[in-house]
Amino acid sequence: MIRRHTLGGTSYVFEGLVDLMAKATPTRSGDQLAGCAAESDAERVAAAWALADEPLATFLDEVVVPYESDEITRLIIDSHDTAAFAPVAHLTVGGLRDWLLETAARPDSAATLAAVSPGLTPEMVAAVSKLMRNQDLIAVAAAMRVTTGFRTTIGLPGRIATRLQPNHPTDDPAGIAAATLDGLLMGSGDAVVGINPASDSPQATARLLHLLDDVRQRFDIPMQSCVLSHVTTTVDLIEQGVPVDLVFQSIAGTEGANTSFGVTVAMLREANEAGRSLGRGSVGDNVMYLETGQGSALSAGAHLGVGGRPVDQQTLETRSYGLARALDPLLINTVVGFIGPEYLYDGKQIVRAGLEDHFCGKLLGLPMGVDVCYTNHAEADSDDMDTLVTLLGVAGAAFVIAVPGADDVMLGYQSLSFHDALYVRQVLGLRPAPEFEAWLDRMGMVDEQGRVVPAELAGSPLLSLTGPA
Image (cartoon, rainbow, N blue to C red):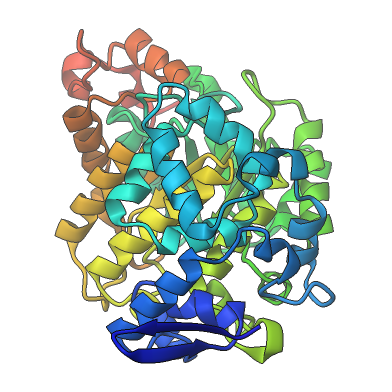
């Protein structure tokens, strides 16, 4: 259905919901590459005005990706919780923004937002995010509570966890052990110790899983590990008795993009059940670890929606969260600046996208984390990442990713360092996951204020990690 809005004497026409959503999106290079971005600031404002007047119920009747040809759309529509939707069903997109901000300011905000969350579709959430300032995204996200658990509890208020990412370009066990030691000694790893393997071979993956599990058991660390191989590799290793904690997979917001990753909804559900069947968790049974990122569907050429029109990358990203919440993951993060400047051009776009993704995922009931990162050919630097990690800490992000020296030597991109994670905890008064924090205390690695102390002063037995067993 055609939408129109007149602004400053000029009438703007939007060719359906897909076009309207794209034109209302804050500027980003990926939408310009796809040919769906607004052609001027005036057109963007006109689209935002028109989108604000759109009834939320429209998103249940008018999809952005065809129901008949896309299993993500079918999952979103068929699993919609009408009872949870009822309190906001009468609202427009602009009305939902006002309701969210008013609710976030009330003492009972967390419970109210959690109750409505299952009734919101990803497209509703994406739409309202387009009308919100960065401040709005932070304020509402900070009011929400989403907790999950395996061996540590993720998402509790006043805490921020970290993924310790000890990647190595050749999967060398000594190099991975050294990076793991580096992170643990600086209080990192309470979300997961997760390796991006250089090889997806089952043998290499199994070897790394055994390495991490040996470290966990040797030092009695309340942590979960993960080697980020393809889900089919991990499921095969589960059947062979390899010590798998979390099952990883990259996902996207269209069936076509997930096909490019070699996964289906059914496959992911089966993997979730396989992981849970092991019963390796101690405080919970959330076993999935999922990663997303704006631009993945576009990079796979799987970004077209109703009428063959390109869907904006932020809406498609939020649709991936609709898939994720059906899998009840322990962790999910957007790798916000990883794909490159073709999709998020500079620091401003990366910061905005990171806040959008965190808000949208959390509002949809996910334990949302962010890989605060950029590629070396983007118009961004560590100052931009300092800004984003600080804002995410204020917004209540479940976790962030940290690598030695902020430089991932295997994947070739810039993320956060272990020191950056300590910074955000210190300046915002945030703490690690409680089970991990208690372990740090038992190991003598934190002082009375909970601050990590130098390993030499602590006399930590972790210093023996690279020595003889």
